[in-house]
Image 1 (tube, rainbow, N blue to C red):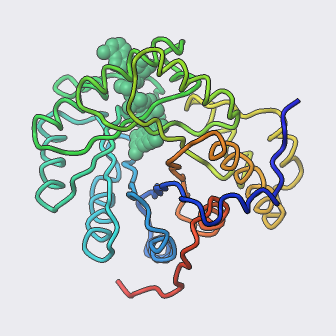
Image 2: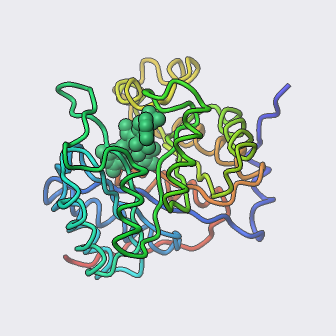
Length: 305
Ligand SMILES: Cc1cc2nc3c(=O)[nH]c(=O)nc-3n(C[C@H](O)[C@H](O)[C@H](O)COP(=O)(O)OP(=O)(O)OC[C@H]3O[C@@H](n4cnc5c(N)ncnc54)[C@H](O)[C@@H]3O)c2cc1C
C-alpha cells in the first residue's frame, strides 16, 4: 500500500539542503494585472529561485508584453529571467530578431517551444519560413548566441506524439540541438513522472527533467486546459473539488494539500529542482517552498514601477 506523507514528516526537510526552485509567470494584460504580478515577483524573490520564466502567448501574441516583463525583471530585481520563445506564426528571421533583442538586453536563458496551434483551428501548421519544431528553434538559438536553453517535455506524451518512445525521441532531438534542461508539463500522478524518468534514463537522456508543479485552484479551468495539453486530470482530483466552484477559500486549502503532498513525494524521491506554474500568484508557491524547506522570509514591500 502507498504511504501517505504526514505533515509531521516536514521536519526532515528543515535544516537540510533545500531543493532549487524556479517560478513561471505569464505577461499581464492590464495595469492591474501588472501590479499584481509585480507584487508576486517581489514576494517570491527572496526565495532565491534559480530562474523565473515568462511565457509567450499563442502565436507570439504577447511578444511585447513578454519582452517588457522580462526586461523589468532583469532591470529591477536580482532574479535571472528566462524568456519563453515559440515557433508559431513567425519566420525564422522574426524569431531570431526577438532572440537577438533578448541577448542584447542581457537575457541569457530561453525556454524554446514550438507553441500551441491557434485555438481557431487547433492544428499546427509550421510557418513556411519558420522553425518547424522546438528542436529546430533550439538549434537556431544556439547558432545565434550561447544561450542556456530549456525545453518542454510531456511525461504522459505530447498529445500529437502518441507514445512515450516518440516523446523521448523528440526530447533527445532537442538535447542534441543544445537544450540542457527539460521542464515537464504538469502532472498529478507522481509514479507516472518517475516512470518517465526511468525511461528517459534508459534512453540515455541525462539532462535534468524538472517537474512542473501546478497548484490547482480551479478544476473546471484545469479540465478545459488539460484537454489539449497532454495532461490527465485524475477522477479523484475532480471529485475533490466537486461543488466548490463558489468557495475559493476551500479550493485554496485543497490546492495546498494536493500540491504539498506531491512536492513531498517528489522531494523524498530525490527531486532537486521544482518549477512552479505560479499563475502570477505568490501565496501557494510561497507556502509550497516553505514545505520544501526554503526558509527565507519574503518581503511584502512592492516598489513602484
Ligand atoms: C513547461 C512548458 C512551458 C510552455 N510554455 C509555453 C509558452 O510560453 N507559449 C506557448 O505557446 N506554449 C507553451 N507551452 C506549450 C507548448 O508550446 C505546446 O504544448 C506545444 O504543442 C508543444 O511544444 P514543444 O516545444 O514540446 O514542441 P515540439 O518539441 O516541437 O513537439 C511538438 C510535437 O511535434 C512532434 N515533433 C517534434 N519534432 C518533430 C520532427 N522533427 N518530426 C516529426 N514530429 C516532430 C513532437 O513529437 C510533438 O508531438 C509550454 C509547455 C510546457 C510543458
